[in-house]
Amino acid sequence: MFFNFVMEKLPHGVYFAAALFNGRECFFNVHLARFLEARFKEVYLPQRDGFEFSKLTGALAGFLTQQEAENAVKHVIYAYDIGRKLHKSEVVVANLDEPLDPGVDIELALGAMMYKHIVGFRTDVRACYGTLADRTRGAHFFPVNQCSIFIPHNMTCKTPEEAECQMESLAERIASHCHLQPVEHYAQLHPKLLQVVEAADLLFEGMDDVHSPESLEKIARRYQKHKDKMLALSPRIG
Image 1 (cartoon, rainbow, N blue to C red):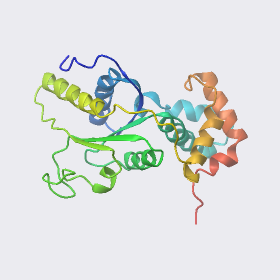
Image 2: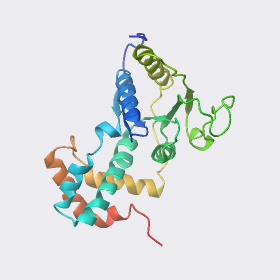
Image 3: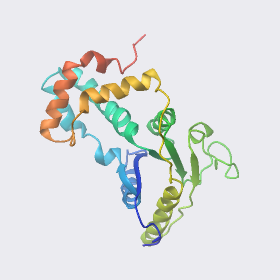
């Protein structure tokens, strides 16, 4: 291994916030997650550990109309990612490469509101909102300002071996900023966030594996039972 002085895993759960909409993004995410998992107790990567749209839609369609099921999928994924996995993680690791992903921006902001330790990193050499000489390396300062620590990381690799080395170096830099002290008490969550956490508890409480057919059916039944509270996760349409 390029870095071999991390002797024990840090006892923190990590929420890995990153765009996941093409092969380049997904490939990078799974490889960095592999290195992070050597350093942290748990790493939640939505593209790998979240719900499959088709299976979740199929389960919900057994209890709801097709249109209701399509809307319910969005509520369930939102409740699981934000109200369960983000809420229970201690650290948010966020990819701030261009183009900035709106989902990542939201996860950063909500993570900050949940008092999480937020590590943003940027490998991009494009300075879309300033210059590379800026403290934020040309990234938009709104998402960067949500971070506890911001890591500019050069990854101009030319071979797979260089890519592996540079990615492991990034994982080590992230881990080096996450030696956290336990927090005894958090201030009360904002009502909007509390609403998402409560929805997640209603849907997923007592489930170790939310992906099994039995769990998907249970989630669908719970959604139907608490449909009014789930629909309240969406705004009123004016």
